[in-house]
Length: 417
Image (cartoon, rainbow, N blue to C red; front, top):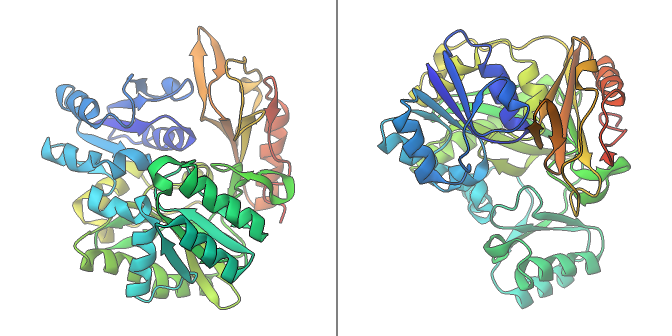
């Protein structure tokens, strides 16, 4: 099969790396891809959000299957457009991708179908939102309704911080139209866990659990980022909690989307908080998470293309999906200054120095001759596997120490909690 992966980050490199192992893949492409992806797939210079050009290229080049990985093209309806062109794809259609594209939609869905989540209110008027924040007090959570590159959530510890977040989103339009409407939630407490699920519209199969680290600096301090590292599985996610989540969250969500006429096919990401009152949904994503995908797919022991095609064809229940024993850890090496101002174009050295149980996923790199250069905020996802989490973390950090580029920044406490 000729397969195209849409996207350019570390998540896409992890997907490409997994698909490259499939004996069914004859030719692998990625648009637009990055420097590291180019070693495993032919990169095509088309923006991930250019639906018309992407579909036209896929049609002209007779792609048998397309994996739409990022949130923006899913929300724009790329899977729908591919279907109209007769090309099967992995990912939800536009009317199902709304579960991530609109937080107000997902919160109202959970309320309607009694899926446990934080108490909330939705606002389109800034003064009303500010009045609500003052009445509720802090800590409180302020979320931009639309897509904001994973950065549209502020967990405000003070009233001033909450008010500043509301003004930035609704008044200053920090995230454009994504912040025209905001969701304001109670602040839940407890360990966070991410569980990605393969879904075929009716059936679902959870992947191994994982935990992301969103804050830029150690001890969960600093601004929110797209993710500074992740590990899998989470020791907090016990078999009993997994059973509760399946019964009260995963299955009800898939059934709710089907009941609403929005059957979900693809990867449905559940961001969970294990509160004193039981597991609750923090957020949904309509695609693989980044950097959770890197450690999670490192533990997959079944052909990823088979699983993806089963999600598209509605035959997921016919597959026996297997996972490797052990654990995986991904450390993100970022450009100094990320997620705010940072510079690009620095040479990267030491990529050949990593051990056999380590793989370096490229997120923001480009190839200049034989040299990899930094080309984004998150540059690399150094990912190690081992028989247990402690060894996986140690292996990943050992590998990180051998890789360098100017102003490289990474957290030194991934998985330490």
